[in-house]
Each structure stands twice: as structure tokens, then as C-alpha cells.
Amino acid sequence: MASRAFAMIISASYKTDIPAFYGAWFRRRLAAGYCRVVNPYGRQVSTVPLDRASVAGFVFWTRNSAPFLPALEEVAERGFPFVLHTTITGYPRPLDAATLPWETAVRHLGTVAARYGPRTNVWRYDPVVFTSLTPPAWHLENFARLADALAGTIDEAVVSVAQIYRKTARNMAAGARAFGFDWRDPVAEEKRVLLVELAAIARRHGMALTLCGQPELLAEGIGEARCIDTGRLADIAGQPVAAARKPHRQTCGCYASRDIGEYDTCPHGCVYCYAVQSRTTAKRRFHAHDPESEFLFAPPATAITEDRQGKLL
Image 1: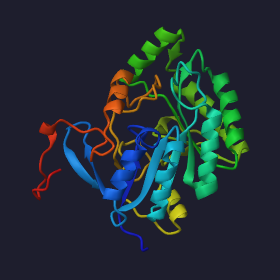
Image 2: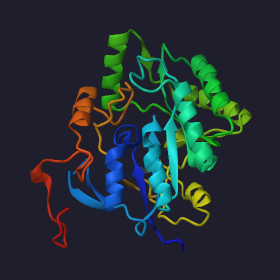
Image 3: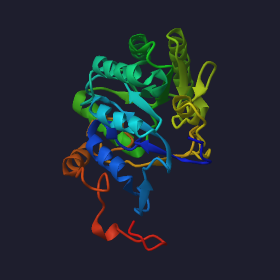
Image 4: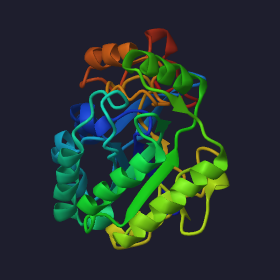
């Protein structure tokens, strides 16, 4: 199939874990050829096409790919290239309340690599959080153990240091009170020193370490991450994949994409999460989710408007 100028890449999703929790919904929307999405800021509603003529490829983000394996099969059968970003941190339970054991997540990633090739996989060790449970020495030992287990199934490890947004600070403080740990946001130089050491470990295991959205922390041996990467998608597709160079934030190295997720819908319960204000809200929304809906989480009926062509958005 010939490449298309500035084709749409679908992100599913940096706002929530669609592969782990919403695979049935995604498969229905893929069959329908579209889904509907609510803008998280202005709350406008729009329709996003998911058909092969409109979409150049998919980028999936998850901590648990196992429930999504049937969906990946359908994506591949329809001719879409895709990349799977899998977050595996091995953090203690007070930080990651309900994620898979790292050994299980590694095994699932290996299953995807064996079926679709190692270029399909990207390992995410992010965010790096500085706590009394996870000091720098702990990160070095932990990252080396994970890199050893993942060697040969991935060629890139994406890292970032936790950015302490207001809701992140609130959730971290609540977790610290509940589980009795301390946390901090170190100066840039301390973060950079740790990242350089992680990069050296990654190289020893045949991986490139790239940094997501934090150019101020780049140092020797660390590349800029492009989580939405037309080059990787092109390698998987076996042909060029063209997309506009338009990241969703100024510090981001990604190409343009359209995200179809919804904030406050991931029930994993990671205390450092930027995408969840409240785990209680996320769990409630997860249980209220309708896999037959056009929306991942439907807005109130009053939010539905019409576009300029008079079509229902």
C-alpha cells in the first residue's frame, strides 16, 4: 500500500490503559471503523476514524498486554502496523497497587515479540520516582534485573523522571501517609546522574535508552524518545509512514497522533500517575464503562453537539 502524506496515527492511550482494561471496547470500535472522543479541556466531542484508509498505524500503551492479544491479532489482520509500549517498573506495591508482577509482564512482552517481532515492543521504565522505597541505588539494581530479563525482546528503553504536577503531589503525599514512605523531587543534576548510569546498563543489554519529554535532562548516551515514532512504524510496516511532526507538548519528540483514551479511567492505582485525579473515580468509571458505547467513557448527553457538516459528533 502506498504511503499517505500526514496520515493519522492513533494513540491508545497515554490517558489510560486501554489494552489492560478496555480491549473489548476497542475491538468493537475497530470493527465499526470509528470511535468518539471527548476533549479533556474544552469537553468538545469529536469522531475519530479507525478504518485502514484513514489510519497509518496504532501506538498502544499498557502495563498488561495479555488481555489485548486478540485485539492485536485483529489489528494485524486488518493491515495496520502497531507499536506496543509496555511499562514494567517492578516497583513496590505501595507505589504500584495493582500492576502485574514484573516477571509476568516480561513474559507477556516476549509473547508479543515472538509473534510480531522485537521492533513492535518498546519497554517503558517510567516514571522514575525518588522515594525511600526506591532510592537511586535501588533503581540501578532493579533496572539491571529488568534489562537482563528483557534482553533480546526489545531494543529501546524509554525513561522519564516523575514530573510532580499538583495532582501527582497530592497522590504521592496520600500514598506516603498510607504506606509510610518518603518521597522527593531531586535537583536536575541528581536526576541526570542516575539517567546516565541507567543508559550504561541499557547499552550493556543491547538497548538504547531514550528520555521522554525532558530535554533539560539529556546527557551523553541518552537519546530523545519519540514515543509516536514514524520510523519504528515504517520498519514494522515495511514501507514509509508519513505523519506531521506535531507533538502534543513542546518538549516532546513525537510525531502527531490522535489519542482515543479518557483521563480518570485507569484503575491500576499507581500513586505517581498524572492521568488519574482519584483512584476511586477511576474505579467507578471503569465499572460503569459500556463496551458497546461509541465513547470509552460517555459524556453527559448535554455535551453532544453537531459539527460544521451537521453530523452528530
